[in-house]
Length: 161
Image (cartoon, rainbow, N blue to C red; front, side, top):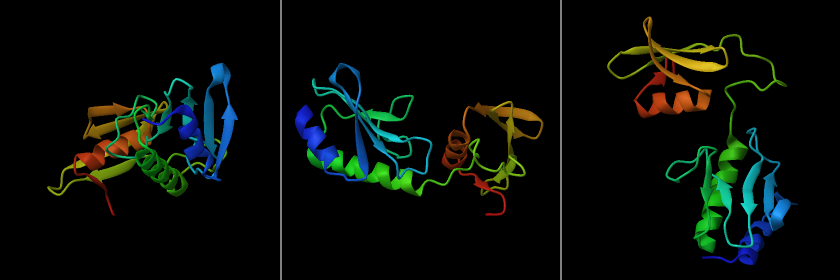
């Protein structure tokens, strides 16, 4: 387990990260190179050793409901691996849902099919994403990435891809 100072030294070694002191002696790090709405890459690093790093775009990490993984017991190599993967994912991120500052897509509905030819329709209604099999509602999601991840895990691809 790294000490608080060692974690700060690892994070400070990344020139693309900006250190921000917050309350109770905690420290956050921002990644302005992120193409995702998420800019805080390290959250509430605390002198007691606790802290979190964003891993919401990565697979294989035990994330909380906000996409952060607890790094209390991480080694330096483990922390660097996580930081490198997260920064790469955030820098390469291609948003599918327009932010308020971007032009809206013409349609937010999409058709998805699997290898057996089964089809599903993904529709955005009232700021939620609904997955339909014909007229039947199958699932509802709060975000498009969540819906797309579910569809990919179930073996579906966007029709025409």
